Image 1 (cartoon, rainbow, N blue to C red):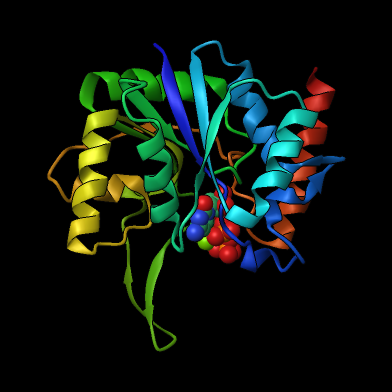
Image 2 (cartoon, rainbow, N blue to C red; image 1 turned 30 degrees about the vertical axis):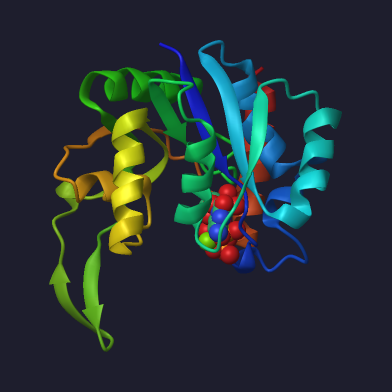
Length: 230
Ligand code: CTP
Ligand code: MG
């Protein structure tokens, strides 16, 4: 099943505390976001990628895409103040090109092709499917340093990207969110609030988002272990 992917890449990476967009930081000599693009470039089912970027970083990002010979980038949308704005801009550019669309953080370079395939199939069948993993730790609610509740872990999942949708469904959800001034932390929330069920696909724990400096240490370790496996 073919799909198109929208990759938000227009953040500033404040929590990474680097001097530039964290996506440009290198892991073993290659920018983080290039690893992400390579996964989709190599996937025969991926028909194209749309990147949402900051206007003043566009040239630099385009140069990297060329240097690393990434073939499937169809174009660049101008990102917005919030991630949701960047995703919407990317979605608008992908209009009329696909039945199933994936949204994937450019900052998650370790996504598995098997999970992508499963997400696309599920989204095609049911409309919406997102990647996640069961929570490993005990989770408690805390107010003013005191536990108020221990939440039943069996029902808790940590949500990742990719998130896959029938294009029309996600576009309508994104439109309604904009009209209502609703800001979600992922795409699924926009679809959930329309009353549409969202399936979960079990992903892998190493599909981490490069967010804080310690994630880079983890990222290097993942790369090293994958090289050993080859
Ligand atoms: N993103 C985006 N547009 C924004 C904010 C984020 O396209 N206005 C992108 C980021 O580039 C990243 C993904 O969304 O690929 C996930 O966001 P996050 O990890 O929060 O990245 P940043 O917003 O850059 O980091 P921070 O929140 O620490 O500033
Ligand atoms: Mg952010």
